[in-house]
Length: 314
Image (cartoon, rainbow, N blue to C red; front, side):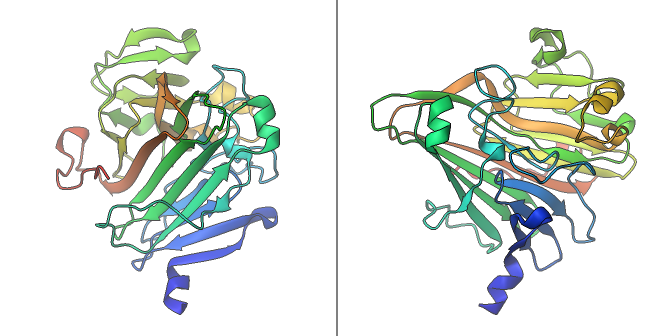
């Protein structure tokens, strides 16, 4: 029992909210709040924080926590009848006592399984019954892996349709010194221009003003290069064809009550998502999506990612 506690610790977080701390033997860690099923911290073996969490983040339901990795379900953004980014990020999740089987080649013990089911209140605003499962895992090398499974549990024979995203906030040293590789030449929907469709022209994405774009039919690997820190985040995804890139810049940052005026300089959202073509599930059907992020030395770029580290399909 004692060794298990080293890997997975259940405790109280800000304002007494339940959280789970995952620790790997080399010193990497992650923190997951049951409120929102949300990862709020991911640290490397040196104890350096890799995710952005606003200094003004409120840990007070029903407000969403600003930063980390919120789960956007069953709606991404404001395209639909629900609140911005759906309701999963401001609901209380539970520890899943009976998770589905995962691939047998996973050797790590550092993970937690969470579940969110419909409530009668939710059914009033989104008239469907579902199970949303989430596994958050730390790999032996400190990689952070999120796997979601969403099942239609309607008993009335009705299908439902949803969009989804892992709203990942990366901590960067200086946004003006960051570039994103792997999305060049792709089409995107510009949320700042009424979702008009354009084609990316640059050889990489750089940041000089507000950005809010949904890149379509994206590769399974994307690289975020932080030149100041000589660090590259590598995002690998499966089942999530789109990628959203967002930074509010100075003017919008000042308009957000739970976001520091200058914090946009140290934050970049790159979200593995399914936005353009919503997912439809018949009763009993299940959808699965997965994201893995790692931090590596900046000698890496999107064109030469380690071919041995690929998403397993199970």
